[in-house]
Structure formats: C-alpha cells, structure tokens
Length: 181
Image (cartoon, rainbow, N blue to C red; front, side):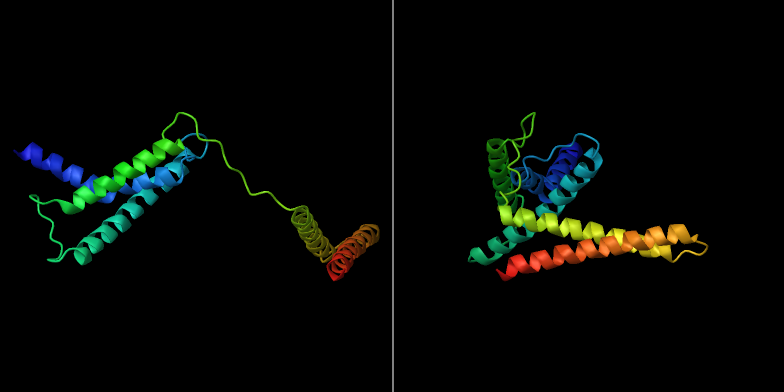
C-alpha cells in the first residue's frame, strides 16, 4: 500500500506544482525548444514559468471553486474537484500546444516582428547613428583627457571630435526640419 501512496503523492505534487503550468507555457510559446547553445537557459525559463503558472492556476481554480460552489470548496480524495479542474486545464493546454506545433520536432515558423513603416525605420536608423556618434564623442573626450598626448595626436583627436559633433548637429537639424514640415 505504501508504494501506491508514494505514487499518488508524486502525481499530486506534479499536478499541482508543474504539469498545468508547463502545458500552458508550451501552448503560449510553441517555438521554445530546449536545444542549441542556450538550452540550459531555455530549460530554466520553461521550468520556472511552468512552476509559477501552476501555482497561479491552482490558486485561481481553488478560489473559483470556493466562490462558485454554494457550500464552499473542500477537496477530499473522495471528491477531487481541484485535481479534475487542473487536469482539464492541462489537457486543454496540451491540445492547444499540439495544434500550435509546440510538441513537433521542429519549431513552428516564427511570425517575426511586425512590419515597420518606412518612416519608422528611418527614425530608428537616425537614432542608431546618433547613439553611435555619442559613443564616439565620449571616447574622443576621454582620449583628450589623457595625460602626455603629443601635440599632433591631440590636434587629430580635436579635429575628429569637432567632425563628430558637427555630424550629430547636422543630423539633429535635418530631423527637426523634417518634423517641422
């Protein structure tokens, strides 16, 4: 009789603390695979999210059973309402995951980022260029603050710094003119 109780304990533990959350995670993120160079990180993400979602689902289902039944909620082995509800959630999530390709050998095709408007792509390009110029400016200022620079090197750095600042100002003025129109 003891092995049966241990098996029931393990099954109950998994049902409350892992299975529903794992099934929901696979249904929500069918493209996640535990392969490749980041497999350990992905495994940690799936297990952690499965554990947390299982706890959340257990609490929500328990609360709904408490509020939704006239006599309140009490779970007994003779009436395992909570376990049946969690099993139903897990089964539905597994079916949804199967339909979305979560358990297939190869991940489903990625949907990709939404299409970017041409103006938006240009804004991002300008932003990246301004960030690059800002980094270069900070690098040049640090180089100029070093002790013991020879005059030729200092002149070269100052010339490059003024070029970088002029380029950043030009981009900023051009962008302001485009916005004003």
